[in-house]
Image 1 (tube, protein in one colour):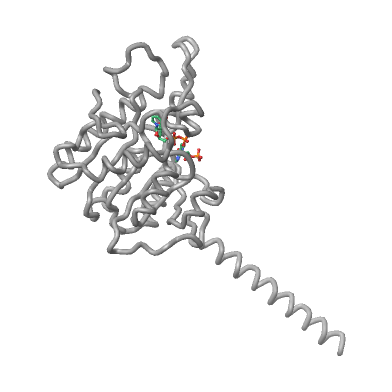
Image 2 (cartoon, rainbow, N blue to C red):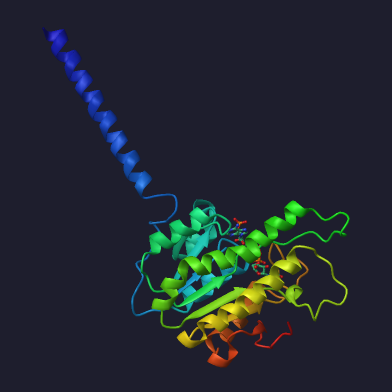
Length: 270
Ligand SMILES: NC(=O)c1ccc[n+]([C@@H]2O[C@H](COP(=O)([O-])OP(=O)(O)OC[C@H]3O[C@@H](n4cnc5c(N)ncnc54)[C@H](OP(=O)(O)O)[C@@H]3O)[C@@H](O)[C@H]2O)c1
């Protein structure tokens, strides 16, 4: 009798432990990997909101830092939010996003729901090898175009409703001087140059479509900057490039929409 009682009590205890573990596992699953709730300040309605793609390192990280310091609500995206230590340390809202993945983009849009966005910065990008046409790797070129061109198109499409609700109506696509056909005297760089030239054309068309709604859509070349992509010999620090770009962005007029600028506000040729 005593043994039967203690055995069933033991089973009950184990059942409780099992249910508690399951409960917490399910709960942490809901607080998904997509969103860093720990470092997520609630979006304040009296501050403008900027969303930056590819913000875990390089120029995107510096955009997040400087906009945060300037008092913006910053939504910074990364492919691996949990590994984005420097970004999480800033204390901005970090969201998971792979710009090449339609589901990832749709999921971000769903999480943002009807949150108004003032500024979208399509910054995420990849570089490419400089190979001759005989040696160029078509798969690598496809990947570059998927990230640098289709990524910003997909993200803009998914978030256009949020941007329409925002006040500033700014769409900033980070391009490169390498996307300028006129400035390409000797270069090759198959894939990267085409991806940025196509991004430029997308931005021009977008500016035409959204002009009457008060949108300003531009492409910006950040200059040659010391990041993983720019390398250690680049001329500018991320701080210099980003402070310049933020100043240019904050002074954009309706007439500037559809233009191609560098980080000092100089107009660049297509
Ligand atoms: N640095 C320069 O000198 C220079 C010059 C001209 C133009 N640009 C442009 O400036 C932008 C930023 O460049 P950067 O120098 O900061 O480059 P970077 O240091 O290499 O950083 C690239 C960023 O893009 C993200 N990214 C790559 N693929 C992605 C994807 N599929 N989905 C989401 N994010 C993705 C990376 O995330 P992971 O860490 O997950 O890979 C990283 O956060 C790019 O558009 C680049 O073309 C840079």
